[in-house]
Image (cartoon, rainbow, N blue to C red; front, top):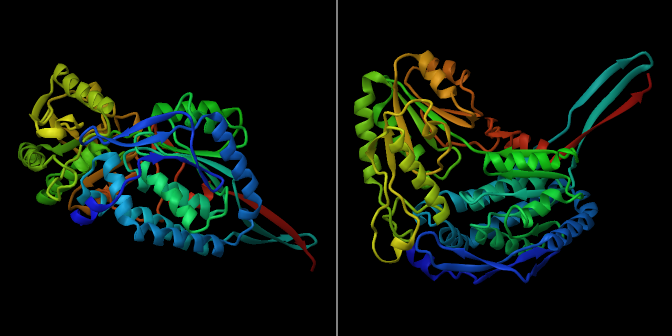
Length: 494
């Protein structure tokens, strides 16, 4: 795999893809590798005029695309998945160069899931059906049935932490439902989205059905998508503040939105848990992808009888992580996405000390030598000793960090877990399954894992409560968001 990866070629320019053509723009910005600071590509930034071209192209393509059958659209999705799998090394190279995540992680998670999203929604759209009700009437009976029709032009704005996985998580169901797309990947990670545009071109997706624009948020492509009057719906994954801004901007247009936003996720570890399994699970949920997963655990609550032992074992797991060259198969911890984000995470490392935290392990920047010292690495970090009201326990850090606190009773554990403005995910570690089920129902989070973490069935609802989002995606929930449901009522004769 390493030899194949090294031979994969990254393109030096990432262009916009509008109406079936790759389009340059006068303004470009740099895409940098966070592992070493090197230039990956120059990216052509779309302005409002180019976004308008993309929306117009989508609007022109919509009538024909929406009238294709579910089977025809499913076949396109399967062809897209097949080409992603055939070009897996190219996608892997682009993903690792943009994010710095270890090749061992991206090859097992990100690229396979990108293809799987298209296959999953191809299957789902084939199986989707409407509701049918027979209603008695004074004249005899009526038949009510529902039709699923596309929203129209869908604006997709996706994040940098899982670039291909989360991009395809939105593109696949939107296409399956017959929508046309104007999509903007994060400015930090434009590579795999550009490769996906190449795939769309190769499989012969009709011109204008999929349009890709590069750029930033305010004053750039992101704002232009949100503000465009002919965009019929917006789906966004990212920071809660950005989601709130988007909601304000679309409110007067009364357009549907789907938001998957921030998280300050909790794990509850009971004394009866399988100790080794719980330690390994919490280590993974705290440090996977350098903590840059919206579902990661930043708050860990451990029943007091095993607290000290658990903290020591978790610290051992953290110290065993190996930051380094993402191309090295032995590397298990990549960099943060950018220097700006590293500055943010390091500011929380400093704040935790100011707030009185005990730094069990980590808290700094590793010395890796050579070009890697130009990268955006930080040490995986564990804190104890903070008060529940501390900013470091209430604000999302989005780095490889967790705080561990003891609890004594179930009621206290639930109160601590729910003491957050966020409500995305949680994990419960206990061998008493009746307790697990009981507590899962009481946790204010859109996803609860019991004795596992990050295990996903693509048919299930995905989304958060409180500041963690609005709406649900996954399975029929995605199909419902990307569709308008219409009821048809027919009066039948006796």
